[in-house]
Length: 404
Image 1 (cartoon, helix red, strand yellow):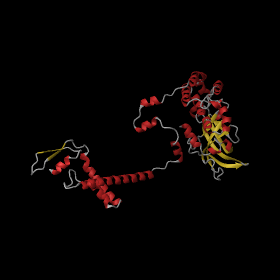
Image 2 (tube, helix red, strand yellow; image 1 turned 135 degrees about the horizontal axis):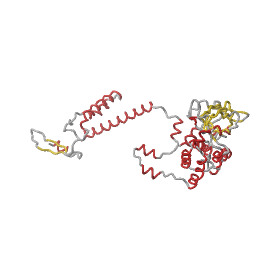
Image 3 (cartoon, one colour; image 1 turned 45 degrees about the vertical axis):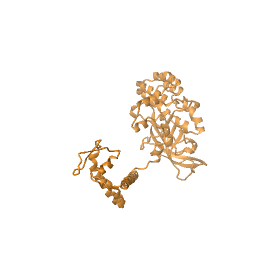
Image 4 (tube, rainbow, N blue to C red; image 1 turned 60 degrees about the vertical axis):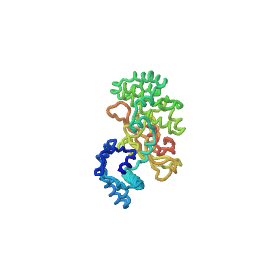
């Protein structure tokens, strides 16, 4: 009875006694039904016993086994009534020791699993560090809110952008006949001239360099509208306003490169293209097979000698300047810490010595301009590297930062 009275003091249980006698112990009833997980206690105890044996073997300490012994008590069993408050404190300490061992095991398992995973490459680290976190964060937290998405993102065209959509874009659509473009494999001269004069190739170039300085949403709206009239026009306008390399120049070009190229790209004097895709590496910017260049010095000037083979380059047959993706190496250490090896972007005009803008492709019988860009042992001075010598090996950063 004394034991029952002491147990009733536990706030987590409310005990009722009835029908007791000296020959029969009192019936003890819990005021609240037992939790639903109690039927699984025998299995949990068996698992705990196995853990105890494992720890005793792996850690080599009998104390580890003793610390788990508290879980080996049979279901419904109890410790002798003579247990003192000191014994209860000792049990609590054993449970804390158990948690410590479990934490240590979890940490070791995590470290083991971490060693089995492949390391994050430098290119992956750069990509992970670019861009921002938006609605995708809410998705991964498991609580996305469509109302928050609507309230946060309200893309709108500026009055200038809306006017461009209503006038210039609409006019260009009237100059495009999708059937005639497909049959003739080209746009009319009027359409080409209008795209140049109305700066369709310079929408992303800042106004200070003669471009339109449109937002990404505005460019997307223009491309969407053009695609409803002529897909080939959509592809032709999309490339200069993506990695053209107008945006790359605006962000990373040297002052001399910006002053020379950006005004000419904005008014259509130079139509740009970007040479990335290769026969054996596709458009993988981290695997530039057959697009190599080596740092060398000629007549006291530092530069690279490049050999490359590109194909399926959109706008190559009509481009006046090409951004060229190359894999740069510096075996003789001529960079001297200014710039590095790896993916590098060069800017070459069409008449650059050794550059061949080869025959036109017709992928899927599409009419937009598409062709090859090739060269062997082409000398490229450092002044023609996008961003100058300091940006050698920086091409991957440029790509993912612009695309993000």
